[in-house]
Length: 220
Image (cartoon, rainbow, N blue to C red; front, side):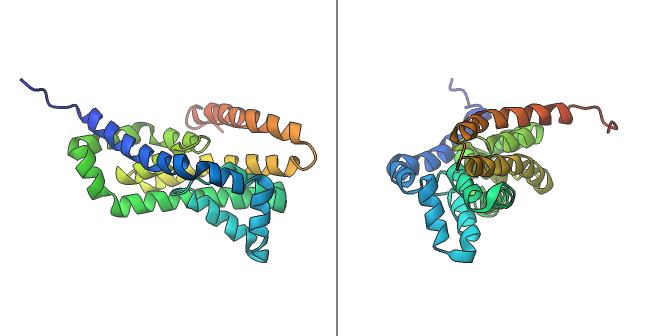
């Protein structure tokens, strides 16, 4: 007697399809984009847009949804061009915009395809996962390669509540944007410090965030 596949397997298939759609462009064009979008190359590319260079940077961060654009390099180039404060604001805004676009498109147009791949049970499994751990998944994914796009798309497909999604997206994107903008800014004269910060800052930020989130309600 054949056993009916578990809903979790169906949802895993949906995750696999999303990851494949993101990874395949990296395999095809990743090396070319990495070569073209070095730190200095990205800064020069944005500079050709003059006063609108910051908007070009945001465009690159949004384009990372579909193309193998090294988003952290773009953020560092924004820090190099605008300093850690304005570069951080622009980088955070670009990361948030990218997450909102991925979430919105998948929520509005991707549900039928997701239902075909995962079925009703698989989508229900995904909804339960994001209801329990979606905030952490979204926030922490912003610090990883590939996963930010996949997690944002999944959040839209399973219709994670908008306010919860946006809050967790901001929590992940703001420290990310400022950290890499600072790395780009400091890297002009102190590349060793910039490299150290790129490894240490995410760990410290999330250690602090974890302690704050776990505080009992009512404590200031």
